[in-house]
Amino acid sequence: MTEHVPLVSVVVPYFAHERFIVPCLDSIAAQSYRRIELLIIDDGSPDEGARRIRQWLSGASSRFERVHFESRSNRGPIPTLNELITLARGEIVAPIASDDLFLPDSIELRVEALRRHPEVNLVFGDALAIDASGHVIADSFLKSFFGVSPYFMNNPGSLACELILNWCVPGPAFAVRRRYYEDAGLYDTRFAIEDRAFYLRVLANGGLRFVPAVLGVYRVIQQSLSRPAEPAALSRNYAELRRIELDALERFCGWKKLLLRVAVNTWAPPDGHPRRRILARFPWRVLRRLLLGFSRLVARVHQVLHKAGLRTAGAR
Image (cartoon, rainbow, N blue to C red; front, side, top):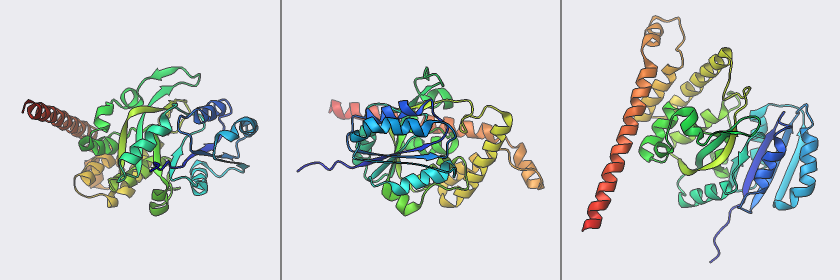
């Protein structure tokens, strides 16, 4: 019996990355996985990116089972991403920003992870980090930017804690079953940090898994929304994260909801009400670090006990 090989929809919302779009597309074409459709929307970018994309497609479109490209007026990154997902025909959707890259076996590893775990809707992995010139600045996005070992992401006991208290998912390293978008909805256009809101929605259902591999290349650009340089931008991001997490609270229960409460209060609670002023003085960031440390300790103890059990079983 022939094994089913699902079609993967790679979706690329393009805006103002003229310098980076061709390397991005080259990395998609170079995938070891063959069944790919490529969907691109130029979201009214003022540069020459659309011309470069058309030129690239003229010589590479035969690599893909289907290609869709359109250039239209600007609607914003989240509506554009949602539009691309509605155009997708693949069973699996793999979004990528137009300045990021896939590694050659990236799609294959994601598809295999989803095949091995039919109960999950989303898989993600680690990424390299590069600067605007393409120089590698970190071998592990998770470890270098968020201080988290990939081991803790690969441990079911600590994965939820890491995602709630230490938001650390690299953009070009995940894939989602298209049916999940159909069942649970697209990205929330109320939020600019749309992936945080989306991951919390998936996590509330328990339907995600870490792939212990480097799957993509994340380009760190100073103007990036996820890595803002200015204090004002950081403040806006913190306020946005708080709104996202408050909105997600009702989807959680038990210890995950308690962790999310801690995360919410980490982002500078508003002044005004006396109770809120008291909450603002509580060392929430210290508590968050303590909870992360405890979760990682439990994961390590579990690992030691598991190995000891395997050795005992082998001795028998």
